[in-house]
Length: 395
Ligand SMILES: [Zn+2]
Image (cartoon, rainbow, N blue to C red; front, side, top):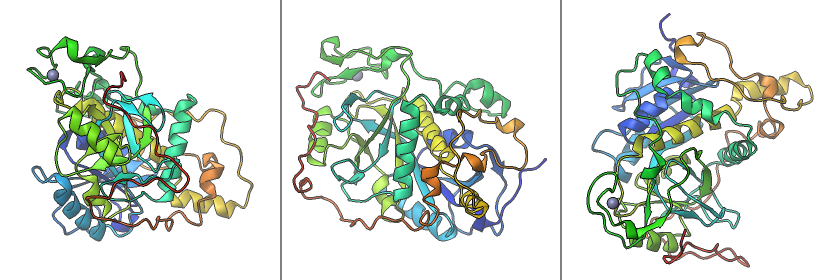
């Protein structure tokens, strides 16, 4: 059966990615693929269409060689003009990470996922500019993190969608094991002043510079919420990383595109950590980090009711029932998916989400947008900035 085609106005979720690996990971998260909508968009962006948990999703990749804030901004402008009914924007990909999350007091490792979130002390989600995702998304992120921490999340099932077996079943032609987790021995944190010598695996780099042991080989990705710094250049220096984190409100992740998109859309920025933004920055973890970020985005859509289901809920005029005791749902491989029907049972819409129904599309935070360079951070009145990672910390 050929993929179905929807009217362009039926798409409500926009998923942006910057590089090819991120785009492949995104397409692997789709329950179904759609053919081009009608009428077709007339801009020059290259779109993919599909469905995740009853959300109709448009995926767009920045043009090759046009990454960075300018390329992201151009793509986002065309995207939002061609799809005016999109209500949720996700910017999903990889980024460099700080070794330590001062806001949640836990280490950050390669393959972990950082979601740009306002902090408890009121600091914004994106620094260099000040901006926030819509409240609906912030609430959904909190829900995803809570479910994951309570062991009630199918996140790992989402990751399996990118397993070699599943990709082969879909007829994928590229390197099937590209999204596998690299061995933990390649998760090496060097001191901020350490110099890289040679090899993508740092085999020629000074062992005496190593600042933290590699994590266990069976370590699962952690989620982190905190500010992401979006700048104009790649950070490849541990000292510069630490300086910027200290200057820009304790940012725990660094990337180069979000600021360009945030001017156009209040999107949620999701980054898999592919390196420590230091001199040893390499490519070994790129694909796995892209996969964990994409799986998080899919989980987010799993946990967000669609407008259609919220409306059905409201019309049912019945009390919201408790969530089913087991919310683990096995994602359908694309090859086996039916051609229609909802995956989520409307009765499983959590009460907290149902309460958003009246404001789901209109809860944009009216945070100011300020062009960087930003003034030094000022904590909210009566509050202190969280303790920042220090250069001489032992992680
Ligand atoms: Zn190295």
